[in-house]
Image (tube, rainbow, N blue to C red; front, side, top):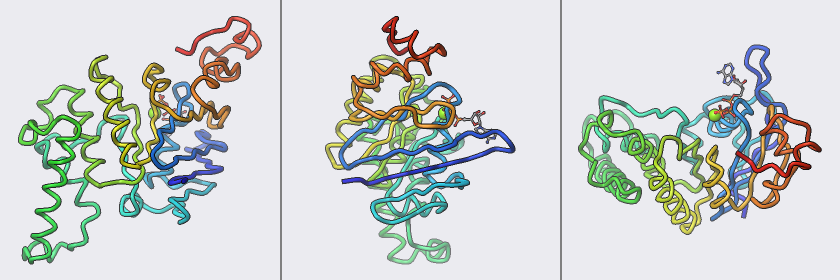
Length: 264
Ligand SMILES: Nc1ncnc2c1ncn2[C@@H]1O[C@H](COP(=O)(O)OP(=O)(O)OP(=O)(O)O)[C@@H](O)[C@H]1O
Ligand SMILES: [Mg+2]
């Protein structure tokens, strides 16, 4: 079952065309990977899907609901959570507070109810805290809840961002380079974590440069190059695809396939 579909997405920044015609599909319980050289448009596509940017053209659906151009908080309310390539944590807050910030996105109690601490609001607060702690446990950072987030090593900060996304209990999780800056051991743990998340029927869209992680985890890979989708397939198909090899190596496709080059 398809949880997320984006099609024909175009986005221009003051004359720079970041996306011409990009799209991606994420199915329930699967890991879809989005790869491509630096500047291919991966993060821009994420932003157009998650509501952090409004696409110039194209459509985004969550399930069978069209969500094109919906703001990020609305996407979150409909089950989409994400992390950021450049971490977007609040350095002055604790780990737990950072995770709670994400959870507050979808809470229905308004500011007045919050100030008065009405019963419903107190109930929501308690539940949010439980979910935040559970999410931190899930990523193996439960013992860090009360630490200042900016005191943590980078790899742990990445895990906090993933916990913040998980605390939203998403049906679709978008991860922009979650393994960047992780040690090999941490990257392996991340792989296990992501597989556990898909076992809960969540669909994951993974942008990742670490090909070892991508090839090991992805059910399907979409390759972007210069704002266009140039290939879609299973990991072994993508690894052998001359157009993909050429995009990574910057050489002619035929030349690349003759050399049987491996992806970086
Ligand atoms: N806010 C912006 N303003 C202007 N240009 C932008 C903006 N965001 C992205 N771009 C440009 O759009 C293109 C695609 O960038 P994007 O960050 O989406 O690539 P990417 O595939 O995520 O690259 P990387 O692998 O380096 O993260 C690049 O040419 C980039 O310079
Ligand atoms: Mg990027």
